Structure formats: C-alpha cells, structure tokens
Length: 293
Image 1 (tube, rainbow, N blue to C red):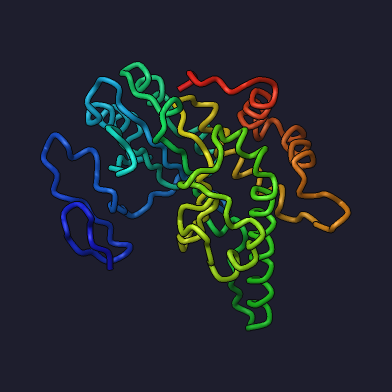
Image 2 (cartoon, one colour):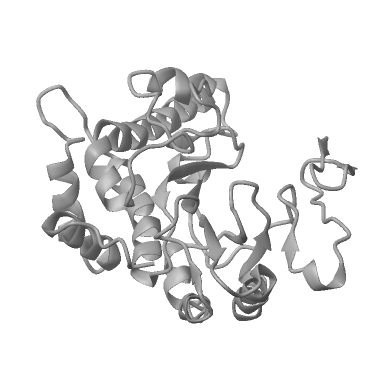
C-alpha cells in the first residue's frame, strides 16, 4: 500500500491513484499516480520513457495540455519534485517499432515553440524503462530444474546488459549528454552480481540502472532533451544493448563488452538504430551543443 505524498490518500499497488486536482490543473497528475498500462505494438518486450521538461514563460499546465492532446492515450503527465516549474511526460509501454510508427512526436516542436526546454537545464532527465521480459520470462512449466536454468539464463543476460553500460561509463555518458550525478550514479560498478541476483543497490533507485521495479529495469543516465532524434536514440540505445548482449559470449580475452565492439554492432544495424548511430557520431565528432534543447 502507498500513501500519496500530495493528498495523503492510501491506495494499493497496481490500482493507480489520482489526486482530486482543481479543474485547471487536472492534466498534471500527482507523482504517485500509477495508471494501468496500455501496450502499443507486439513484441517480446516493451520500452517506456519519462521525459522531464521545464517552462520558461508559459504555464506548465499549458504545456501539459499541449503534450496530452497530441499524445492521447500513449502517455500521461506527472508532477515531479525535482523540477522548478515543469512536468514529466510518461509514456505507456511501446515496442521500439511502435515508437517509430505509432507515436506523435509533434509534441516536441510544439513544446519548444511554447518556450519549454529540457536539455539546457540543471533539473531535467530522460529515463528509459525496458521490460524484464526482454531478458527472458524466468519461469517454466516443466519442473524446478528447467525453471532454475531459465532464471540463471535471465540473470546472466541482465548482468551482461548492465556490464556493457557500467563498464563503458565514459562513453555512455557522452551519448547520454551528462555525467553520472546523484540522480543516476555508477556507484554499483564492481557489484553488479549482487545487484542482479538480490537487487542490492548502493544508491537505491538513483542508480544508473535502477532495479527496484518488479516489471522493468530503468536506465536513468540520459539528459532530458526536446529533440526527437535524441529521445529516440535513448530508446534505441537500451534496445540495442539488450539485443547485443542477448547471446553474447563473454570471456576475458574477447573484449565482447568493449565499446568498440558495441559501436560496430550499431553500425552494422543502422537501419534498426539510425538515431543512436547519429547521436554516437555527433557526440564523438564534436562537443555537445548546449543549446539543442
């Protein structure tokens, strides 16, 4: 059971909760709001993102209404205490393909045109969730031995996924647009086995990869941005990291988790990850643009 930080109401996990906001503020839900998810597309796993934006001149409620009108049932707006005068856009689960074919990205230029920003702030982040089913179901109807093997296989894939990100911190930070901070620390580096097996985290949910959610892993490293290619690149980075590490054979000699090998994989699959390839190229060819939004 949770207690809403805003209105004090108690509600069961999974039931969702919405404060009784005043009529003009009802578009931005409370931080604890958790609606039942809608799933877009069909696949083994889904992605979701949380994008924080700040207002420069318009009311934050005006921006939330713009985003909600354009995104409809694909997303909802939430309050976030880390923001000065903004809100968080939270999408329902989508496959990567659904984000590219069945998602209205017009909300980005509309928000920018109304004076909202995300990149050039000290407060805004972009978090990407990936279903734990991306790493296997972890259950089997055929008895304990098969179930244990599936769990171990699932954990091994999660470990490879995390090591790719943690072992390449400097390169990940460059494409993410920011260095690890207290909202997304790399403090679990070297302790990833316990993180995967037991959920132990040095900084709780404020880790580069947060494992506190039952249904998802949350990659929190990205700087917020109102640039379509950068938001899509974050989604593609998480999906590419999942697929690259799925059947990867890792030894002490083959350097399979090196950044060079991963970038070669992205380059060979540019049709699937075009935005990630673009941001990788931009990030390593020149300094990041502080004014890109």
